[in-house]
Image (cartoon, rainbow, N blue to C red; front, side, top):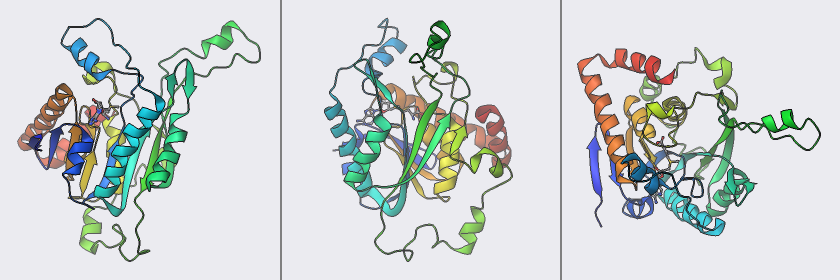
Length: 299
Ligand SMILES: C[S@@+](CC[C@H](N)C(=O)[O-])C[C@H]1O[C@@H](n2cnc3c(N)ncnc32)[C@H](O)[C@@H]1O
């Protein structure tokens, strides 16, 4: 089967189901996977794109069982494990979801599911958003008694998993780089001792005016992960690419990248964003554009 593929810069955006697309990829190629899986119960992406086109008034929730959702995810992350190089990382942004009136601890179940299919758990990072979107904490103001505490939700999780590598140390994909390669990828630690050195990251989410996707993650989040877990020219993949934030950050950081997205409108938007970024880069010096886009987009 061949999929519609849009080659842009150092990477590509493929339109299709990531399971089928990954089935056509060779083993052990990816150094870093970064993604945020679809919130099956929370957002119906087809309805959202119809809404974008002005055809529907409100999003309808899709009813799938939790078991179906689990299989959907584990099938795809199993295939991702196959295409990832031993020692490579898989970084997943995920949060608890509302499910049949309950708050479901999806992230905590998810870690177990990932371990069962062979990923090694490595880090739990909390993405703290500076402003709450809900008013849950107001309940206690109305009922100032024990049992009425519902904190506003300002956190999501960023879990880091690694594909086990058989030979301890010898084949380490990070240690075995040449001195030149290490030097070319030296990290700027000027602002490291602030929040970056801790496992709570405070990053402003994107506003709806900045992106057509209903739940993009910020470019700064993608940028941090890519810088911490890959070298220039490594292959970075996002299997649920949405608006292509991972691809955009990877492109600017000179990584090769693949984004897979099933909804054509989002894939097209990702391609447009990448092209716009590439055009900007050709008319300005690459270093100055990196600095400017940091100011403009990472806020
Ligand atoms: C949470 S969003 C990702 C948003 C993305 N991180 C961004 O910054 O724009 C999940 C995406 O997965 C896509 N998706 C759902 N099922 C998919 C599948 N089987 N294969 C590829 N993409 C899929 C949805 O259309 C949605 O855009």
